[in-house]
Length: 103
Image (tube, rainbow, N blue to C red; front, side, top):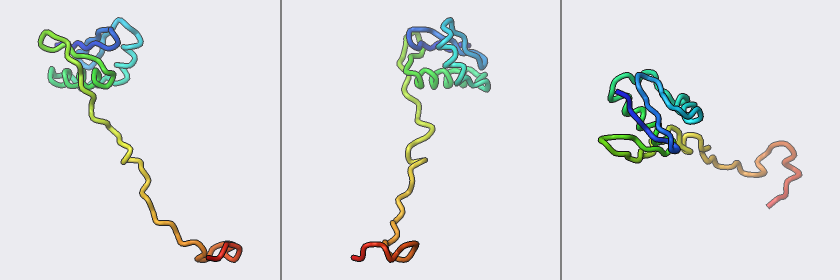
């Protein structure tokens, strides 16, 4: 059973791992996220909901359009943030330590 979503005023259907849409731009965006493993009705619905939420669209469900919620982020800033490391005390040796200002 195909799942219908609406993005940027254009409708697209997802069925058996493939997107169908009349607008080439929307189709290209959805094809980039297409999940060919989504073959069951539940998996199709879940994938369509993810894509609609990712692009700020709506899903046709139970006879009405419902805004899709944003999906959880796959990566966060904390995954890449550098840990703060204590600085080494100045003047504890090293090249040209004699040229540094003495406290």
